[in-house]
Image (cartoon, rainbow, N blue to C red):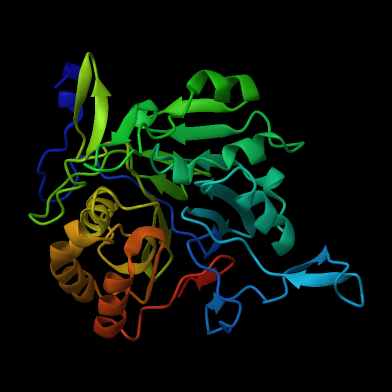
Amino acid sequence: MPEDVQASVPRRLLGPAVDPIALEPVDEVVITTLVDNVYDGLLVNDGAVVRAPIAAGTARAPQFESGSTNVGLVAEHGFSALVTVRRAGHSTSVLFDTALSPEAMMTNADRLGIDLSTVQTVVLSHGHFDHAGGLAGLAGRKGTRALPMIVHPLVWTRRRLNVPGTDIGDLPTLSKRALVYEGFEVIERRQPSLLLDRSVLITGEVDRTTDFENGMPSAHEQWVGPGWEPDPLVLDDQALVVNLRGQGLVVLTGCGHSGAVNIVRHAQRLTGVTRLHALVGGLHLSGSFFQPVIGPTVDALRALEPTLLAPAHCTGWRAQQTLAAALPGSWVPGSSGSSYHLAAA
């Protein structure tokens, strides 16, 4: 293992952080899922959860008497979310991941009436292409150039899925040179980062402290020097954390390759805030390899007692069913266009 990678392998760290992060409490956080794997236009508003309408826009269609038809939102195997925090009467926004295709995120934002040129920062949860494909659409819009972009240094890692009997080949790899040329201010950080006047925390590398969240199968490989080797840890995986005043932590994941429970415990340790108010995003429990991880993950999340649990993207149907049954008062289905409005106590 290369020296720089070996130095970054998470270690088991227990107890409070030696230098805890003073994450400023916020008065409100709104997480709007711009793109998810599903879009259900028949979901209805429910308390803090606001759903997108089934008719989110119109499109030209000469087959109809009016010459147009209603359209919904794009769903694809990817994830993107807009996070808006309000503190002391001032609101600011962060774009967390950009989904799979160049156009999906921008299409949905337009149909939802969201102007992404107002975001302060872009954060990539990790380098997989289903979280970064929309950067092409974002870069092409007026007013989105020169955006700061927070990434882990290993986000540029060349990867592949080496599954016998398949011909998947290399996964698309991000180009730092291209992003800088587009005008993004690329900021590489292994350590935690505080954004928006210390009101948003980006975890950086996540400590792996559970004995059941062991990452990806061996078929997930990275290019190291002269050859390929397994890449189970996906070390560039990071999450976004907000401290909602009087309620606790709000944690947003992309795929959660570090493990949902590892991520929450890491956030608790960094901030010193023990209460988990909400967990939103991909939990990567889909497929046979991750089936044994579902049970202990559900048990740990049930013990954490989140008020809101909105698994998305790569969580998988089996884990969704198990989570819905185990935490019926917390679990809500995800969908492109859903907004989670969370207010301070």
